[in-house]
Image (cartoon, rainbow, N blue to C red; front, side, top):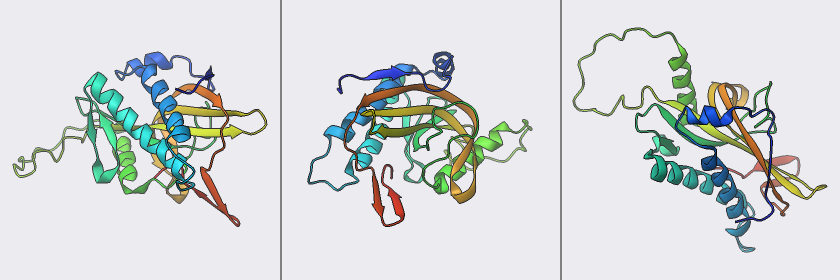
Length: 229
């Protein structure tokens, strides 16, 4: 593991332990995920890899470690709608994925963080379902079950949360700060980016020793983010 790691408060994360506990989760799960993803970014690539390899390794590790921890420790199960990886609780009422956020990630108040990339079809559907779950309950009209599709509505009541992360390397101080939050998106705004959340659980930031990073590639005036697929 990376040495000399410091925990720092991120905005106002008071009560985050209790909020996570209400979902059957613990802070240790997310602390370990973020530490492992930072370690993979630094140790999982060589000088022969592509320049975007550290960011890709970071993303793959966040997905893998999130799913592995909750599957092996809590009995949750992987779910991959349109190849968008989630981990889902036994009741199929809570699903969690990973998402990159901007500099507002992990900080309280408004504006809310925006996703670094457009949401895509699967996340847009998840946001729409989150919105529908907020509506007043109405007794559904009875429909004769379709035996050919027994699992079609299995995830109809699932709230989709995302572990948002934002990584910042301060050259002046020689520190890398990773801020994060577990949040439920409820709007896809301009440019197709998630920009509003109905609930946010702010997690403590983690500081790491600095390392050279190739996570953003610049070509002329065009900046291409290669952090997450």
